[in-house]
Each structure stands twice: as C-alpha cells, then as structure tokens.
Length: 422
Image (cartoon, rainbow, N blue to C red; front, side):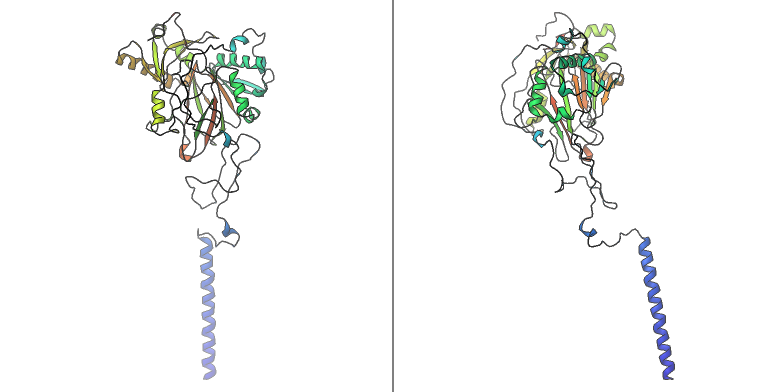
C-alpha cells in the first residue's frame, strides 16, 4: 500500500512538472509574438536612440538629419549631441550690436554693368560653364561650372550686366566663394556699389555690412508677421532707402533638407502684362516707401530688439527705368510701399491692391529657387521682387543665410523729367 501511495505521488509530481513546462513554453511563445520589445542587453540598455548623420563631406553645412530608433517617438526638437561637430559657420551667426548709425548720405553710383556694354563678348565669363539654362523665358538663369570667386573685374562687370538682363542668376557649387569668409565678401560686394548697413537686422559680429536671415527651433531673427495666414510677402529689399539696392548676392550657410525655397518675380514682365493705357497712368504716379513698420517690429522686442539707425521713408516712381538696360519695371511692394502720392486714400488703396494682387498671382512671371548646398543667388532688386517661403518652421530646422547688398542709384522714373519731390 505504501509503495502504491509512493507511486501515485511520483506520478502526480511528474504530471505537474509537465504542465508547468508546457505553460512556460506557451508564455514565451506569446511574448515572442507580441509587439513588446525584448529586454535590453547590458550593452543595448546604454542607448535607446540611433543617430544617423548625413554625409559631412566638405560642403556648406546643411542640417544634420537625426532618426529615432524604431518604436521611439520623434520629438519636436533635439538638443545638440555632445559628440556633434561645432557649427562651421558659428562666426557668421546673428549679432545685434548697440551701435547707433547716422542717416545715410547720398552717393554717386556707377553701375558696373555699364562697363560691360562695351566688352566685345559681355557673356565671356560663362565660357567655361558646364551648364547654362534659363529657369523661365523671362526670368532667371542657372549656371554650373563657373567659380564666382575667380571672376576678375571684367568678369564681375559682365555678371552685373547679365543679372540686369535676366533679373536672377543661380550659381551652383560655390563652396570656394562661401568659405573665403567676410573679408572676401566685403571686397566682392564693394565692386557693385556702396554696401548697405541694415538698420535693424542681425549681422556677423564685426561686419555690419552683411544682412543675416536666421531661424531655428528656438527663435527667429527675421522680419516675419506670424499673424498672417501665409509667409509669402513679395518685396524689394529696403526699398524705403533713398538709394535702394541693385545687384544683390545671397547664399544659405545652413538650410532645411526640404522647404525654405525663395520665390522671385519679374517686375518687368508684370508691367508688360498691363494695358498700355494703364501703364501710361502708372508712369505718372509716385509712391511712399517706409521703413517705420520694420523699425517698430524690432522696437516691440522682436528680431533682436535693435534699431541702429532711425527709420526713413522716401518717394519713388511707381514705374522705374533700369540705368543699364533701359527696361521699365513696376516698383511697388506689399512690405514697404504705403501709399500713392496725390491720390485719395480709397484710390491709392485700390490701385495698390490691384498691383499687389497682380504681382502675387502671376505665376507666369515667377521663378522658384530650390536651395542645394553651396548655391549662390544674385538678383537685381530694381527689376524683381522676391519672398521667402517659411514652410519648414514646424520641423524646427535651421535656415541661416547671408546677404551682400550694394546700394544703387535713386530710382529713375520711366517718365522723363518726372519730379519725385512730394
């Protein structure tokens, strides 16, 4: 009887062990089929984030792309990792000095494009280009294979003439130019005119002659109106000055992987689309361009909260003539043009609204520049308008650009002998 009881006890223990093992195997199988991650090993537990960095070949330092490990949420922003290289263009980040500047004095501007008119081949600076093509029939040319930094004085004169004729030129693969630094930028810009010192924007420390655009995940130092439903605002740079810019050079030091394009429109083509009778009327008009709103924007605490030169407003012709090509162009823009002199308030507003809507909606006058590393864009502020597209800010990516802005002549009225005094 004792042996029988002992046998039964041993059998029960065996059966119990079998079912315990079966339960364990089943649980392990269920775990392997679930979406739960396996327990980390001692080494993998040290890091749950995988960082993938785009090739850091010697190009202008566009944004580093970081990718979270699978299963990890993508944060709005990530702080710079301790092993990430310092920002190559940190010396060109915005600085807001407290210096005060006196009013700008008039100066005599001689457009370098005029010298190129007498050259036997005013496009010879493009002879070694590997690619030259028109972006649109009437606005913009894109060039590869020409190093702008190597252009001599004649080549720069020819460049000025070509930009005057095409309105916009895009040069790819310009790392040599960009990496030569601020002293070279000064020498380059002064070939085309007296360099404009912006009254409110940030500039590299020690170099107030350069206007910077800057936005990252923390802040923006740009003249941006957040209350608008669109970031698009067509303008000609600082048109409120007595002698606004002519040929302008701009490049990005850092840019988002996508977005942040710059839009351009031909004010020559915009004028040509209007009826001869209306153009004749516009040639008799002059408008007030004002820098007061831009100054007030900074005084409100935005963009660096700095106004280094008191704002001004000046009267310019609604239709101006280019001093080199003789082409006529509209010269009004939403950002700085305030009213038409001599018209009643309602008449002025209606006329400007018609012109602004025409500029905004005429895609057949426009060109779009997509930024790739080491691209330099030059445009003629006298015959074009442009706008940034801030379509990347929700991603918190950096866009850092530098503008070299020589001043040109006081706008020449298309109507000969037109008096620009108030």
